[in-house]
Length: 340
Image 1 (cartoon, rainbow, N blue to C red):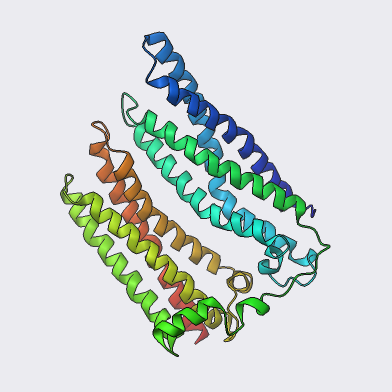
Image 2: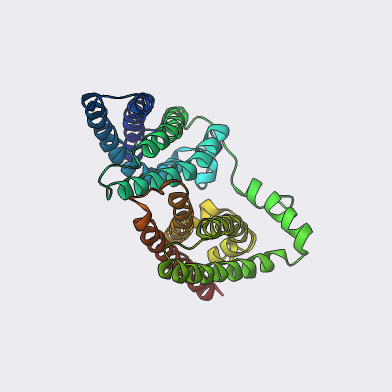
C-alpha cells in the first residue's frame, strides 16, 4: 500500500461514500415499499421525515462523488514515482489491471447518474407536493448500488497497489502497430485514417453544437413540442457516438500532435505532459453529460407540477453543453495551432 495525501483522501471519501450510500440505499428501498402502502397521515408524515434525511445525506455524498473522478486519477498519478517501470498513470493501472479497468468504466456511469439525480432533486424542490419523491427514491436505490461497487473497488485498489510489482511502460501497448484503435479505423477509413478521424471530430462536434442551438430555439419557443423526447434522445445518441469519435481521434491524431511525439498515443501521458488538456477533457465530459441529463429529466421527471419547469432546465443544460463543447474544440485547436 502506498500512503500519501491523495490515497488517504481517496480512501476516506470512499469509506464515507460506502457507509452513507449503503445506509441511504437501504432506507430509500424501505421507504419506496412503504410509501404506497401508507394510509394514515401520521405514517406518511413519518416516512417523509425519514426521506428528507436520506435525501440530505445523498446530496452531500453525491456532491463529493462528482469530484472523486478527477481525484482518482490524481491519486494514481501520485503513485507513478513509487511503481517500478511506470512512466505515467498507465503503468499504475497495470498493477491491478482488472480492478482498475472496472473502476474506470463505472466512474463515468456514476458521474452521470449522480449529476442526473441532483438535477431531478433540484427540479422536485420547485414542487409543492414533492411529486417526484418516488422517482427520486427508486433512482437513489439504483444509484447507490453503483456508488457502493465503485467505492469498494477503489478502497481495494488503494490498499493493494504497492511498489513491489514491476510494470511495463505505456509504449508497449499504446504504440504498437496492431493496437485496436489503429487497426479498426485503418480498415474502414484507409491509410490516412488518423487525419480523417481528426477532421470528422471537428465536423461532428460543430454539427452537434449547431443541432443543440436549433433544438434550444425550438424548445424555448414551444414548451409542449410534440417530438421533444425523441429529439432529446437522438441528441443523446449523437453525443455518445461523438464521444467514441473523440476518444479515437485523441488517441490516434490529436494527442501525438499536442505532445509533439508523432508515434506516442497514450492519453495518460498527454495529461501528464500537457496538464491543461485535463480541463479540455473535463469540458467535453461535462458538455456530453449535460445533453444526456436533458434527455433523462424529460424521460423521468415529468409531472403536472414539473412540466412547466422541465423545458427551462433542458434549455439551460443545452446552453451549458454548447459552451463546454465550443470551449473544448477551441482549446484543442489552440494546441494544434501552437504545435504545428
